[in-house]
Amino acid sequence: MKTRIQELRKQHKLSQEELALAVGVTRQTITSLECEKYTASLVLAYKIAKHFGLTIEEVFDFSEVEEL
Image (tube, helix red, strand yellow):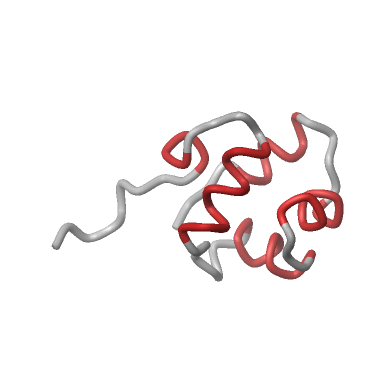
């Protein structure tokens, strides 16, 4: 899933480690999210979006998610 995490992190001058600490995950998790190797849980997506003062939809791109 595509995200704006890297873009937002750089705008806010945060390292991957700093963002990881702020949302309670490891730096490797942030790396995996940015490289689209991992999809965030709903709780993690909420924490990341809230950290940047945005909605989940403003951070995560759901356009490629299959409709049920």
